[in-house]
Amino acid sequence: MTPLKIGAALMVADLPRFRDWLIADQRDLELQDFLLPEVLLGDWPGRVAAARTHLDGFEGRLGIHGPFYDLALDTADPEIAPIVARRYVSGVRAAAALGASQMVIHSPYSTWDWFNFGNNPRIGATPAAAERKIDAVHAILREAVALAEAEGITLVIENIEDIDPRFRRDLASSFGSDAVKLSIDTGHAHYAHGATGAPPVDYFIADAGPLLAHVHLQDADGFADRHWAPGRGTVNWHAVFAAIAALPQRPHLVLELREAADIPVAMDYLSGQGLAR
Image (cartoon, rainbow, N blue to C red; front, top):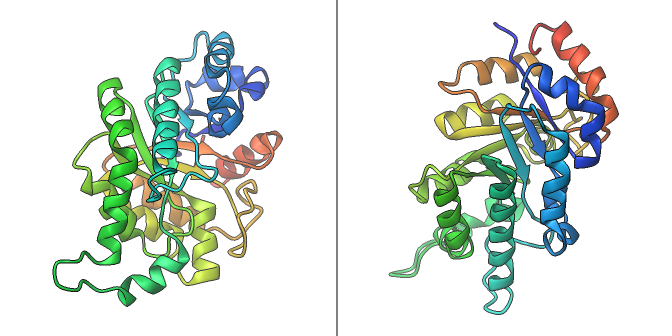
């Protein structure tokens, strides 16, 4: 297998350290400042301007991590839902101002959902719980998706607690839009595999198929969300990279590590295994 070129998820403050590495091979980059409430509620244009000063000469694929703290995609409360919806719109606006082509958002599917969707079947004309979940997400994301379509940005829905990846795939497909696709976090999938009986990570990738547009690469132990450098946990990286290589497209591939300082260690391991460059 040909080694795959990978990049990293970083804060703007990390860019001076990794700028040359990113630009030398025009690697994928995801800026994560915009997941912070204080950024999107504050001077996010200033954060965009700061990023731009470090990215002169950068021509790689660029994305951001969108907001998610206390912002459930299926929020139904009539007072809270408009606030949640506006925050996602703010994220898309920040992505557009930065010139990013993707924004990561978090899956609404919980462990509880998987065990209880079958406990809430359709009754007459009343939609089943899984269908109500999709309707609620559409209501929250309607304006954000419309803006993303206009700006050429793709919202990628990342697995969090997901046990069955089909639910998230069906959600993304339900929009019928190229502006909504899928993201996979390898550590989240490995946690779900080890702790809740989900399929292994490569199964998540194969299930996403042509809808997979983004991958967070991080290692874990199948117990918690570690964000370790690959090689320090128990993810089967050869299976993961083989599944990615088998896709008809190349998703954004970024290391998302707890410590950005571990990026060189991660690259040494993955390149040493013949998987990444």
